[in-house]
Length: 426
Image (cartoon, rainbow, N blue to C red; front, side, top):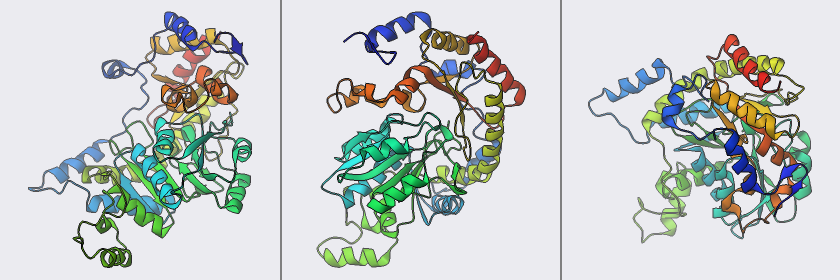
């Protein structure tokens, strides 16, 4: 199919073919990244972090698998976030899978889960693999998260949860949304992988839903190399998450009454090897726990610095060509979002070339590379041109990107980066 709709190309192959002739496609490459002047993340591990790991490894027989350091990190994270329980896992993707699998334990018949088109692939794939139907809702351009209005339009008697991605340090929460979900007894599951420390109404995002997911990937607010966390205030969900994380083994529960019930109900089984549900091995390890504890101590300070960076960035960028009206109250952005105000393919090509030429790493399409409805894994699951029904996500897909915002980025460096961006629009 050829032609245009709402100013966007329908012939994707032709558009991207032409685009490749005009710019170097931004494909991650480790050797190239090492030469970048402004990577997406810089210095996320301090000498202090690494020395703590080395000190642990110097022991004659250091304990390395999931143990005391992991448990201490979980407790400290729960206190920082303001929730009762946290479960440390090996990635944000694992956190996504566990939260949706925990939902499936309550709704084995399936149902619908409302998801955003701008998100990471694992949010959608977790919904699909658990047997739920993903129902998409377009984003609010000021937050990059799902619009409350669009979510409410998609609620039905089949809706089991809203899987909200708080994208790029912003959040998608509103009083209206929280009240409606509560009235309908629909779960809110928060993906906070990109918004550690973001706040709404004076509370940290990730403490509002029945569960929340975090990622500790290197390029995020803080890192455990690879890692993630699932958080909840629900006592039974906490036990389910602990068991799901470790093969479904009942012995992973720390609720003795729950364990006793499984043992009494299965007298023919070895009590150490009772598998309550089909689970995984998503446990993290002691090195991750050590890094997590060390990085958490610096998180609030680093986020404050990132907020100062964002304020300067938005004050300098040319608002005639780029959007600056983001909802920044309570935000905790680890990236600067660059979104063209208007649909302009030539400007986008010039901008990409300028960033490349000046050693500034970027990711087109914001979180997850743009509109997920265009991705091959959804072909046959959604309509062939359903992506066109989400104009805000489509705009981000073609005319949005982000670059790094890290704590040691200084004001002169921000001015240099913004000058490159603004010159591209001249």
